[in-house]
Image (cartoon, rainbow over the protein chains, first blue to last red):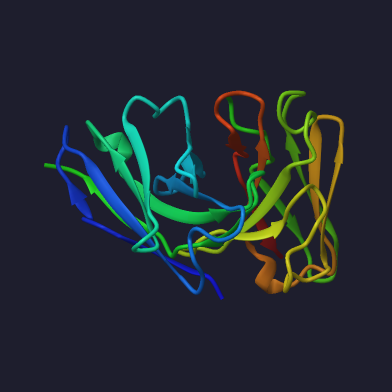
Length: 119
Length: 111
């Protein structure tokens, strides 16, 4: 059974960089033809897809965030990571990582981690 | 890329059937058979209920079914149960550089 777990600071100051890691267990991140995605959800609002990475390292990003987002993968640690720079209060949200079947089907999700942007 | 349009709320009595719509464009819902549906209970992560328009992942009840006509996809929940009360989101692959777009979300209430 694949499991995903987000980790990282719960509080980030405005203008700084938000950094989160997703640790995958129950299977190798580099096996199978999977993408690995990040999604976020502000309190009381809907889901927003942030971006994804393939096991080869190729990435796709939401154009609305592309200039500030970097997603990377560390296959040796079975992890993938999210960096979002120049954060503002609008980036306050629960951030989820998920396994992506490659066509929008996100079949395994982490529990989510709340990141608050505040000074 | 705008979010896909869903009704804000849908309600039904136990045992009834309800249908949630998800309207997009020919660049997303209408252009690909890559529509997914997610169930989200309060404080929990979303759960994949339907993918590729009408396929159910292993373990998902057959009371949940999906379909698509033109630019609108639909999720039907039959035999509504109390535990079906949750928020539901559709998503679609899109030809735009956004890659994936989610719906606005629908709150399902079991009366």
